[in-house]
Each structure stands twice: as C-alpha cells, then as structure tokens.
Image 1 (spheres, rainbow, N blue to C red):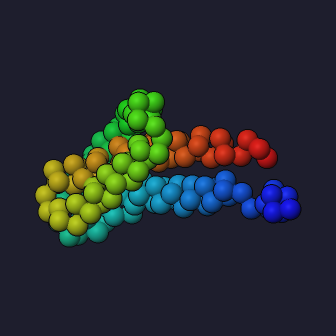
Image 2: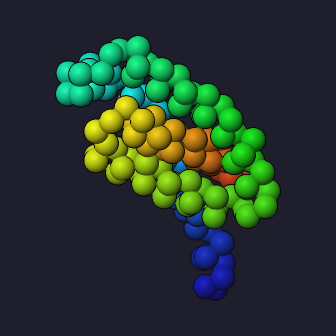
Image 3: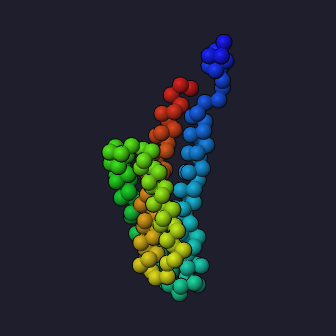
Length: 136
C-alpha cells in the first residue's frame, strides 16, 4: 500500500531541477549584461575612457564565444555537474575579484574570467533539464 501511494505522488525531482535552472540562467544573464550597465560608473570612478571599457567588454564577448567548445569538451571529460559547479565557482571568483580591481588590465582579466565560464552554466543546464523530463 505504501508503494502505491509513493507512485501516485505528482511531485517529481525534475521540477526542482527546473527551478534551479531558471535561477542559474537568470543569474548568468545578469552577469553577462551587467558590464554594459557599469560603463558610466566605471568611467566616473576610474577615469577610464569609454572605448577602453567597451574594448574590455568586446574581449569578454570573444571569450564568451570561445568558452563554448571549451566547456563542451570539459563536460564530455568530467561530466556536467562538476563542470557547472566549477564554472559557477570561477564566475564567483571573477566577480569577487572585481571588488578589488583598480586598473584596466584587472578589469579585462576579471571580466574575462567571469564571462568565459558562463557557457558552462547556460547551454548545459538546458540539456540536463531535458533529460529529467523524459518521463513526462
């Protein structure tokens, strides 16, 4: 009787994965787009030119594009869970390091460090989510 009531449960673990995926994708989109919002404050705080800040953002876009094949090969080698957790950790390290930046090269480095690992969080979560809803 208990096994019958356990099978009739409508709550599935895939819904937890879906909620976590939503919030991780939301956070990664925020991290990706926050650099464009910070152009004016960075100009005023550090007296950098808009072209230097825009160049750093363009380089981070290049790293974002190059991070896709890198993250794909890492997922094949180590598995999606390890790569995504490592990617989230490196994004956090890059964003935390931005708190202590005071030169332009530090901005380039920390932004690239945070942005390159966004690919590990965005596309891979969608593929993992698809695997959990096979039953439905």
